[in-house]
Structures are given as structure tokens and as C-alpha cells.
Image (tube, rainbow, N blue to C red):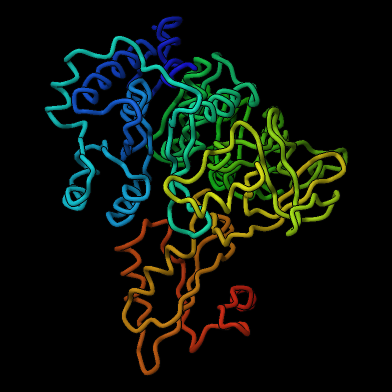
Length: 503
């Protein structure tokens, strides 16, 4: 099976002078990118990284991220991108749950976490270090490492069934089955120009940004972060044809006055997902950009990336065809709806969405119980509740897990709850999702104090800011005398949702 870096080296051989990445005024050709990757692979190899080494990548969205990722692939290492918004404790947990042996970062991100990482069995390397730059001039591997289909290629972080981060084990075969098929599913070619404002540590950006560029030979206009004015300006300046984006990003783009006047006229295709997509938003995009093909779908890290896909269309009555569907299952995969007894549900009846195919993960790293829960009878149990209609279109109606999706970022209530439980005089905590017109959902916390104790919401807020990435921080913290509970003493989240709805 080809090494995951083979796409890059093939592009460098076929079209060395074609622009691969444009970033903050700098252009890199595929030849330039391949040369940088070869040098970085030499440096990392001389530092002891090789086949099956488990390596975290803690870098902002930039060409450096792509260079390090592809260099690690070339060496046959296992790559774990880390969220750059993680705080030190979250980084430490990620290193532990994935058993990372190395962490590659830069001085800006690496300096604050270095003391904590030094206490772990993990070596931290900064690409800004003079040692790295010197080693990059030494002998490089003659060719990418040989890779078997069963070889691990990526360990991507997700929360599994417990709410604590787990490493999703994806093999070279998993990535080939899904990532390599994605450009074809989306209709992308080397003639496309991709605008990527997605974070590269996320599977959306990894697949439809980096992988789409390398697998097709398209050019990627890479932004360090999403800023609506910069996105619109970049689309206009570089005649971008494809934009992958979460719904919140599209909402801001199409609501912005700069989007008028032909600024988006080069667009041919938009892919959205990563969070529930509001029907009115899809209708507005089709109204404002009638020549743009809008695609939406469903995917999850445990299934590598995409599982379903559909083209959004308006019917003769002006309404969306098939309503809020996530589409049909993609080629090579199976999707079914199962009840609590493992039986298939008839059309229109809701049950758990289960998936099988060559894209399904091997399991969670060093988490056999979570793996056994997720992978049963040859199927991946997603924890999402949905149904199929008579035409095979799938619809999501709820989530078994209490995941909060804030602007495309997954937030697991237990992570926030554990932080709040560490605060003085806190007896009970429950975190739920609150609707937000801009971000889709935001976390809201309910807290009860110990008997006779006093809790200050300002102190709780400041503690969360210190301990949690900003997107995980509660939008509001409500104090109650006691949280509602059922007969067994379990906190009733539904009652809290009802209470929130009345406010």
C-alpha cells in the first residue's frame, strides 16, 4: 500500500512548479513542499522518530503543519494532531491517552507546556530549534517507508463513550478507503482552488484541506484562522472554487455585506457539516449563490471521516428537497438504523445509526471497554439517533451522547463538569447545550453548592478560563439550590433543558 506521503511526492514529480499552498503572502509549489518535507523527515529521523513512532503535532494552521505531518507519514510514524486551543492539562491528558512518544511543536506553543511535558515519557521537539534545522541538512530517507494496509497511520482524538479524550486508531487502509475517495465524492480535481479556514488538527481540515490538495493537485489557500472578512477577500483574490466549512462559518460569510457584489462569483462548490446544518441557512446560500453546488453530509472520526453525502437542492415550491437529510451512505459502506435489541428499524422509525465498512476504526487506543461498546457485531455504533426514509435518505434526530457542538467543535459535558467539581463548595454540576443563533449550541452549566457553602459564579468562570480551551468555557453558569434528579439519584438533564427553555 502506498505511503500516505506518496500523494505529495507524486504531485512534486508531475507538477513541481504548480502552486500547492498560499499562506499569508507566501506561495509554495509542490516541488518546494516536497523538498521541505524531505528535509523535515531527515531531521525527525535523526532525532529517533521512525516507523510506528507515536507523534503528536501541536502546531497552528500553517505550511509548517503540513510539512511536519507529511514528514511523519514519510517515516511511517503514527500522527496525532492536537488542538492548539488545549490548555496544559488537556495536552498532558492527550499525551497520556495516546501514549505519545514525541511531540512536535514550535517555540510559541511549546514553551508554556514544556515543563509539564518534561515530566512525562514524551520528548518535545520545537521546529524552531537550531538542532532541528541543523539535522534537516543531514541524510534523508531515500524513499518513504513501506506501509502495510494494517499499519497504524493516525491516532485522532475524540471522546468515545466516557467523555474523556480517546485516541481513534486509523490504519493506512482506513485512510485510503475514505480520505482518498473524498475528492471524487466531492467532484474535486487539480483545477480547483480550495479555501481552507478550518483548523488542521480536525478531520474536516485534514481531509478536505490537506488531503484534497495532495490527492488531486489542487491549490490550497490556507488561512491561519477563520475571520470572515479575510475569507471573503481570499475567495475573491484567488478565485477559490471550493470551500469546506462548518455551518457557523457559512452563516457569517453569507450574512456579511462583503459577500455581495460578486465577491463569491468564483465559487463552484461548498461542503458543510461538522454540526447540525440549519435548513434556512442552506436555503439562503442557494438563493444568494444559485450557481454553487452545496453539499452536506455526516461523518465521524471513528469512521475516518465522511459516511453520507447529499447535494442540497430546492424543490419547485422553494423548500429544501428531503428537508434536513444528511444524505445517503457513500460507496463501500453500509449504514443501518438499529433498535435497542439490535434489530433493523423500518423506514421512518428512529434508532441508533450504525456503520460498517473499510473506513471504520480499529478501536480506541488502549481502551478495550470503550472499543467493545463502540464496535459490536462488525458495526460501529455511533451513539447518534436517526432514521431512514423510504428512499434511503438518512436523518439525524438526536444524539445518544450529550455532545455539544459549538460552531463545529465537539464539547463533552463531563470535561467541563470535572473542572467545576474541583471548585470550592461545589456539590453538584450538570452541563447541557443551549441553542445559539450564531454558534448552533453553547455549553451552559448548572451548579449547586454544598450545604452551608457559598459559590461565586465569577470565580467559577475564571477557573474555567484557566483550565479549559475557550470554546469549552460555559456561556453561562446558573446556581440552583439542588439539581433535579430521578428516583435513582441521577441528575435529570432533560429537566434542566426544560428549565433553560423557559428562561
